[in-house]
Image 1 (cartoon, one colour):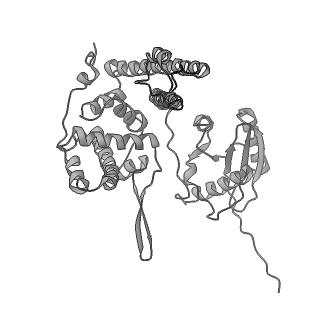
Image 2 (cartoon, rainbow, N blue to C red):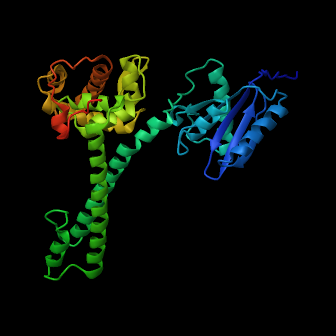
Image 3 (tube, rainbow, N blue to C red):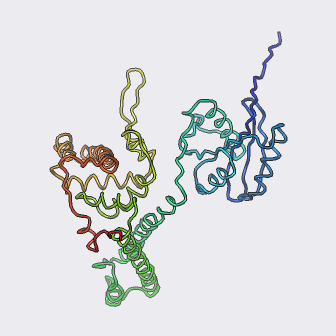
Length: 392
């Protein structure tokens, strides 16, 4: 007997397009339905006229009218959201996909090429628009203004991290010679001239020069950090916008400073809308991930699927909250549950506190609910500047 296999295909009047974005080349995969052989094309990266040409050729190839709707997708990454805005402006229904949410084969080794990635995305795109909404997660795209507003605090954090790297490098170079500077500051150059090694000799010439160059770069970073911090402080003092008002509201809580208030607003609360507390915790990756299979039950920790900047910040704010808001209901809950435990349990507990604190701050900004037992202060005292300007 000869077995026959009937290949089932479906056809739509919609053109589906998946992008695999590279530095020099883009891979495009087109189709019009499940089971249809995809049309694969390559084009130079960021060549928008060529992209419009390929879309038009694909519509002609699949016998679609020139005004047929187009649905597309690509993975979030280095290219950001400019392509999404371009596609939306040209009438394309595009989705930016969270790369970590894409399902993959669980075998240890699997073939992976740009061509296969484009085909995989195209298949998932068809399933997503066919009703399978859980095949991946779609990224919420900020407006161009909201995205631009995040540059200040992100640059500031990167400069601070780079400053820490320079300080650690200087300390490491000194330690390699058996030296330890009292402080890494402007006086280090004078200290180097007087420092002596174990045998009474001076710091080697080339190492001395390298340390001085490291200090010059460190001083440049200090100056740029101060300029950005002054700019942020000035905005908090004088800007009269809804976003800055939220920053001021957070500053009125003891235990929250400039970095925490600014980051929470411009990374999260300024442009995202949440319907419930689960969405708030899930956005930052602080939701639990239980594992249950038969009689096996265990917790795998938090998901870590959200914004890593906010997740790190919330853990820091949770420790600050315990110190500056000891009489609040959140701090009392933590002390009851984890206060008598060992160091490991306290660290686990502070992550749970971070999630509860994030939800409490969301309710505080959205509904005006002050966290139970929290102490309030004037934001003007923290800024130490002029009060909020009054409109004429």
